[in-house]
Image (tube, rainbow, N blue to C red):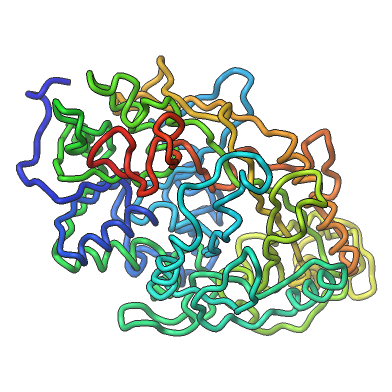
Length: 542
């Protein structure tokens, strides 16, 4: 597109940031408080949890009773706008590839509006995995390099937890953790009985007030809707809004970044974007450019930023941009605890998420796969929602209610009795593990497909390796053992086997995408240096 068609903003900033999530929001916050002028570009809408959250609405107020849409995949009470599919913004899959499930948030705060707020530090071993197991690559930085910044983040965001002294799960600066609920006490007893550790969770939720701008959690357990009191961490309330209040940040919403602009010397000088409201193209300039648009969207920007000086895309002289794409592994299982049928009613909501979890565990030398996983747990008497949670159809007519086994189905008083009897007896667990980054898992620009803004889209090449499949198998075996020890009945996920990779989630489905613009010391094998600066492009950071 020629210069005459592009509207250039006359104001020049110290930094132009693409994306307002955890990375972009933090960059804006730090730079703004240092007195620098920042332009923050967001591809989605404005969002303020204090104004827009559905946190305190009752389930029956939902227009669709919680039914999902493309715009709200987890129902209209979920805090996130868009997700797996976005109108006018497709992506494609290469032939022979497993399906990559690409979650994209389009709003201020990005994906921090949709996450479990589990806030764990990488441990010393995580930065040196190749030295340990010979797979992947070591990071160009160490835990000791980032520990001071972990400490700062703990103080800024507020993370609850407990000091455990675990070798590769470093302790932080913790707020008091909430007490475990009944189902979590039962999980802990069963799991520790078979050698699976269970400790208090580490979540970025304020169990104690840390400043005048953010409130304290009042245990409504609706963090997934976004917190009106800013008691849980979201980039919008904890980073972007405070940054804007400094007077040093201009936020431009509905700005779909097209490419990074470079000058004749190949130096990054700004961003070209399409304004979704008028479909016109604009440019904004800055002394540095910071790409924080998620791993895949950032790779897309770099690969679409071709020029005479950068014919292979920006920061891609090594040809590794888009490569080594991976996601956390995930497999889950659920059931019911007959011991909790017909339990007494009381308020058990707690924080929005688990009060206990299993940290990274086992000596991996004893396993047939590298690295490992942690375990997340759920269950109990959460706020009744649109349905029965794990499905009345799996309980009704299958188990006796108050000593009487009835026919499946029913309505009115009989059905209500069933619901009340089974409510609060559910329990489940999910593993989240590390996939080994591989060069043959990658995204690239599809040469034939563009989005509604005329921007070339990504094409994905991803498959599971035997490592991830064996990991899922081990997860399921562990879950079954814990459930058996608890006396629980497995209602779903127990029949997974080799035919479906033991219930292993599609790559991308866990929404922990990583890779694509890797750090390293060697320009030939990495896109970024240890400061997250593009190896071959001045003034561009990721």
